[in-house]
Length: 88
Image 1 (cartoon, rainbow, N blue to C red):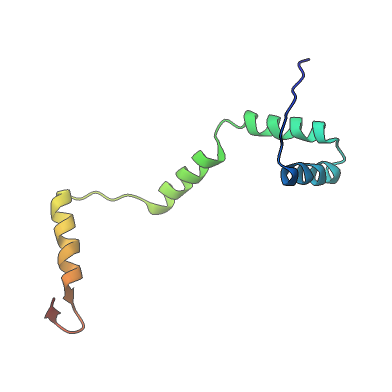
Image 2 (cartoon, rainbow, N blue to C red):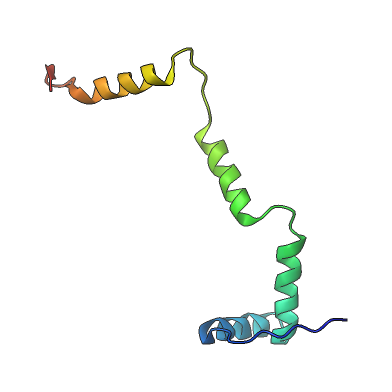
């Protein structure tokens, strides 16, 4: 098996690793290996999952209008206050 040495690790990160290792009844080395295995065995990163969840939440729509028409409608709606019936 290969060996891996990590230098100049942040003190707070090392303490956090120690706490997590203790909670799992592992050494810090065993905990690092466990974290690496868990992260690298996941086919999709958490960032990709978050992106996909966001896109699903937002949804999509289809329109016959051009992007210029949509933008103009948005601008027009911002110029008119329907409560006052006044155009700005």
